[in-house]
Length: 248
Ligand SMILES: [Mn+2]
Image (cartoon, rainbow, N blue to C red):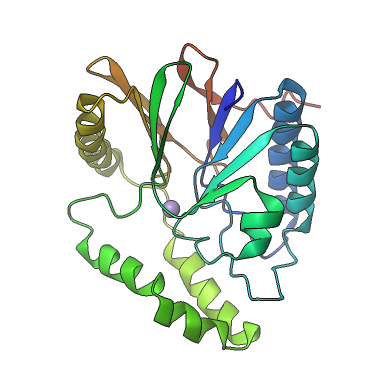
């Protein structure tokens, strides 16, 4: 992977284009243009779309401005990797062949400049989330996807709004956020003990970096309230906040 390596997650691009959504997407596009200027690699760690479902011949049209920005980024030589999240798992060849260089349906690991990365969207990790893990297994099953694909999209997107609604409560108490961080630190520590340097997760809508036994747990935040990203410059991995008010 070319340096620097940027990581973002939980952008939740919305199907419905309100004024505030257009403004928010423009902030994201400023960031993408920054990456285009600097060169390197971009890893999008899940929940890029608030909902995405691709049919054999049909893709969601609301995200066309985003598709365009990604294609420009790739044309400039930046490789873009996409790890599927719980909101945007249902992809086909438009995502995997046309839009991104690489798409992954589960956790990935890789090495850059002799640093070892473990990257996960992060859903289904919490010990008390058994109900969610069952739901995850079901909505990712072949049976579910086959059935869903044969529904008329007008019906299918009723489900879309339901999924979207389920994720509305991203603001948790400090206490609950700490409980999540503690739990993810246990998972990170295991990987660090295996020889990884960095454990990167999204999904939890909190922006945090926590040094652990010579490695680091990094929770990526989101592009709804944090506008956060991580950058690996070849030596260190750090969390940053995109200063969109100062950008042109
Ligand atoms: Mn998620």
